[in-house]
Image (tube, rainbow, N blue to C red; front, side):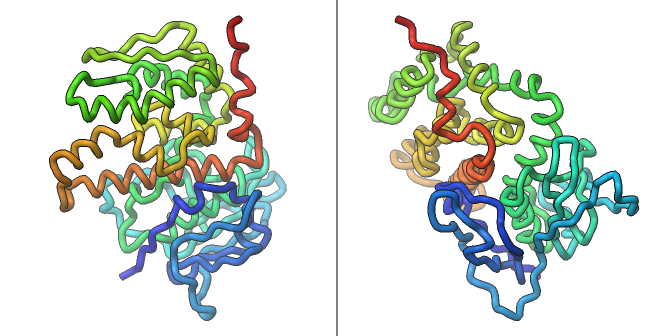
Amino acid sequence: MRAAPSLAYSSLASSAVAAPAATAALGAGRLLHSAAALRSSSSAAAAVAAAPAAESAAPSVNYIVAPAFGAENTTPYKFMYLKGVKTDGRTKRFYDSVRLEEVDTPRGREVAVLLDGRYVVTHHDQLLSCPNAGVALGVAFEFDAQGDFIRPVSMPMTEMVVTALDQALVDRERFIGHFRSAMHTDSVLLRVSAPSGLVTQQRRQWDPLLVWFRHRYDCALQTTLEIESPVQSAETIAAQQRLLHCLNGWQLAALDQLCTVTKSFVISWAVLAERLTVAQAFEAARLEENWQMRAYGKVEGIYGHGIDMEFVRMNIAAAKTLFNLLQDGQNKPEELETNKPQAKQ
């Protein structure tokens, strides 16, 4: 029986982690790390919440540099396909080792993930490669952490990378178009008139976000007490589209993951812009559920509140971690406001 450690994305989501300068490995399901393996661009390296592995443990994830997909290499490649992996966790683990290799792609030099020496292919026949070694290590950690069965629900970093490769990087404009409805169905805009306790919590946690969003991006969002979603103005949609065009395909995939689990474009963007921490975003996204739990009690068990709470928290932290790992490129959080229109006089 394999031991499947949990990766503490929340510890990585607070700082940008650059590519490793030396070999990093997962041995016996635990991270062999050093200061040279994981570095923070602003502070000390953040480590995953796993016990240090014994020195004798054989590493199963190795970071190496090898030209694999260059035109000069005529070696026949072997592939593993993700199409057959079931989303319900019933697919048995079909690999033993995980390795990373630098490869040439149409986008430039990237880092590919290999399972038992075979390149991984996504659902839409894209090579599973990452923009830098930091992101690739995150994906490799998720593959190596699987037990006897593969549980895609426990692999948020891999899901975002696959979304980028299969969708956001293939047709960026179409992918951006999917966010249009998010401005009309944002949970932060859907308010209640009773009970008074919930009304107070909505005003206390959500109103400051709307004020921040309006002042920072000159974008006023309409709230509603009705069942129907509020219709936002053409100017508001245009402002949202300008923000989305600030992001590359990898960053859009992280934003898409955030919007899915928080049900809010405003909360998601606040996470990327560092207006909200992971913990604050979790509380804002689950405001109504948390209020109901405090009022009526928490449901325990496999179908209780706990599973959904951890799923939301994990995905928010993983998306923020991915965004941090991409910060060595363009559009850092502090630069996301540079494309806002000038405030009206």
